[in-house]
Length: 163
Image 1: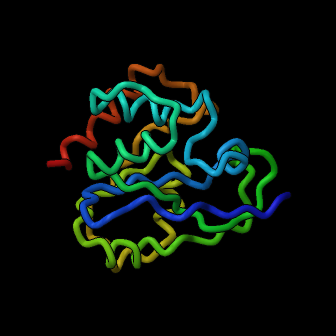
Image 2: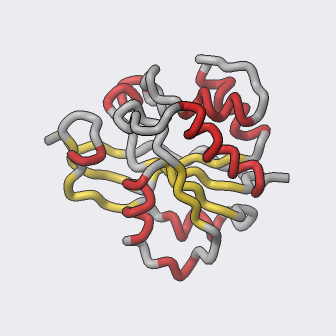
Image 3: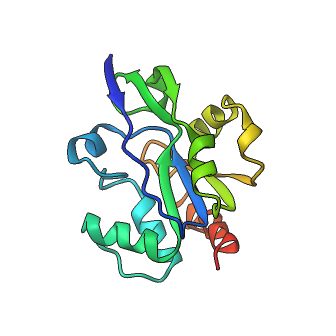
């Protein structure tokens, strides 16, 4: 088991929605980038939802999130994990989601990238966030039970909470 930590949030005062993952996988940790594994469909879905050209340039990817008022973070701050699978996560400690939402009051909805982020979010006392929480199918290659088109259709919901 290896002790790992999440990245700082990608957020600004214009952000309207918050997408929460669980915690970065091995490839993301190596590259110091959210959703860096080439088989993870997160960036492809984000680009397609907003009709942006797909890019592998991380700086450009972040600009797309900012352009469409999307914040990104993880529910888990630190944990122990062997490999990249959420099922291998042990001894997790939560990020301060309530504090983040307090500091960024323009967030109107929370979207969980998969069941693990949702289940961990449920463990955090919800006193500070009376916002809609929507669970989306995981973009991880480990969750291939849904076809890409089905995932994309579900992820389109985020546009309902954006200007």
